[in-house]
View (cartoon, rainbow, N blue to C red):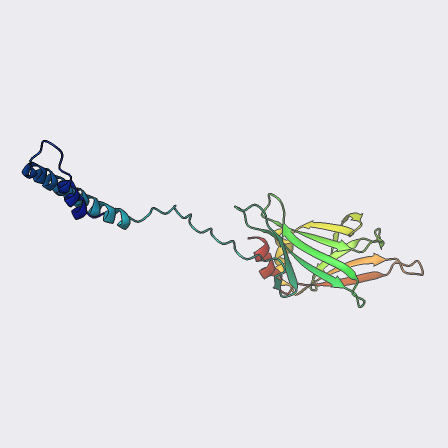
Length: 212
């Protein structure tokens, strides 16, 4: 019902004891009050409809993690990485696998950062069944051979573990080839020497990635 219809109804239904003029005044007062109420409510409703709803705060986008370097090839070396905690970069080491003509592994060279040290270490995995008494040797290019000790032999192979001190590290960075020499037992019971080359192409660049 509109406001005008309510005002007419109030005039028609005049209570007893009131003159028509009194009833008209009352109806007019009611009409004015209704108009004022409607006028006050209108802008309020319009203002409420224009007030934007508060949206929940959106968290800032997470910083994307850098791509993993696992499997990245640096010339003749390959990076092998595994993630650490989110606040720390991934741990990487560089590897080179030397195989024979049949694809069997003859030697695996691994260089990585040693725990709590800024100096890298070198691990050389040799085949099981090598002759230990004649010794194992390492040389860079045409440099002098140095004897290296086999620490132990496990299922994966016989391990040579070296701390790459500044002099040897400088030779490896400047060289093109390292040679690991050891002896094996042949079918006649003799112990011929085997020389296995390790390419040093990409050594410095791969080491820089490992030491990050």
